[in-house]
Length: 214
Image (cartoon, rainbow, N blue to C red; front, side, top):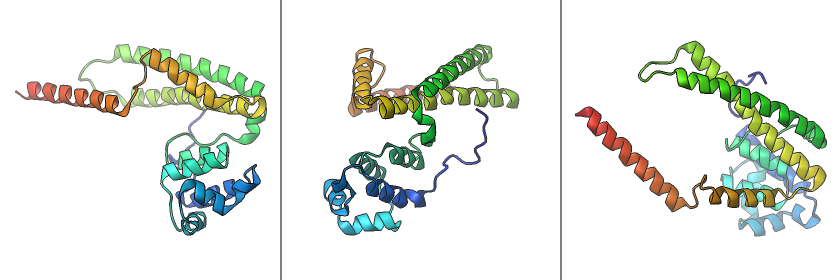
């Protein structure tokens, strides 16, 4: 995929209210289309809800996230995540109509990502401590990194298409993945543990800097 972006975020923060309003109005369950239902379940006043939908007030990410979850609008949630720069832009919903198409794309992107990783591995082995990278090498790294990012988008689109067309329980998929990742010790199990790791890293860097400065 060629790089045609001129900015990091495609959607404007001023559109948050409109996105949330449309998501509420097209909720599958009729009761969830009402402002009263949304305000009560999100713990906000009707006045604040009106201000958010009108664009007078910008909700914090957690509130916008819970809003989309409440009305079960994954497309709106994808847009919100991108606006808050939590994730990539939403995939064109027309492309999600075929699981087979998404699986084919996932396979192609996986091959591209593997090739990019192998090239990056070679660059890594050729690097020398203290030597700056050339502009050409930096551009090559950027291009190869984009190939890897393509794989993330393809994986997300495939799972979304499977959820839409095959009723895949993506929540269960995530839950099972987390359990396996915890068992393999590849993710941090708690906020306190994460901060402990960060502190250890900080003190190690400070100790190294003091030794170098002597």
